[in-house]
Structures are given as structure tokens and as C-alpha cells.
Image 1 (spheres, rainbow, N blue to C red):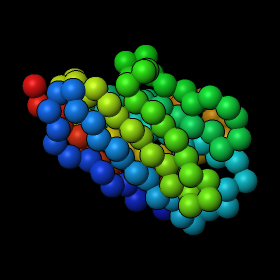
Image 2 (image 1 turned 120 degrees about the horizontal axis):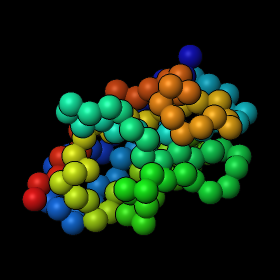
Image 3 (image 1 turned 60 degrees about the vertical axis):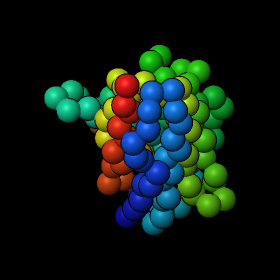
Length: 123
């Protein structure tokens, strides 16, 4: 069973940067998707970015495009979400998740989830 451990959240001022990490273990990487999702209080969980181990070109939600960068280190099975130019509306709990390759970047297609990291952006 896959196990995901996140790190790197915290408090930052608007315009600042944070990097989230997601260390994955317990699965054979024959082809998979790493997704980043977030959930703010009172809101539904939404997709932020997804990266395939096989296909090119990460998917980014429009509201983070050109500010966030998702990447995978396949050798260490660690995923990263670099978040720049953060805004107060980016405040949420951020989750990484694992799915079989080729699935849409939608939460219900992801089977294994990290514990979540709180990101708070002050104005």
C-alpha cells in the first residue's frame, strides 16, 4: 500500500514562496500520477497540479498557472510543489496524492493521500 508523507507548509506573507515535498513509498512506479490538491475552510477540495511519471507536461489549474511548479524526482519518488507569488486566497490545506497513470487530475481518481500541509498566506 502506498504511503505519502508531506512536508514544507507554513506561514508566509503575500508575494512570498513555499515549497511542499511529498515522499512516496510502498508502491512500484510502473506509471503513476502525483496530484496536488488543496482545501480551504468551507470549500471543496480542488486540483492544483498533476504530474505524470510518463507523459509530458504537468497539468496546472488556471489559478496557479505561472506561479506554481510541480515536479517529480522519480529516483527518490519525491514530488515537489514550488509555490511562488503566493496570495492570501492560496491559504488552504494542501495534499499530495497518488493515482494510476492517465487518470484525470480530479480528486476522486486518486487512491492514496498524504496527511496534508497547512499553507497560510497573510496579506
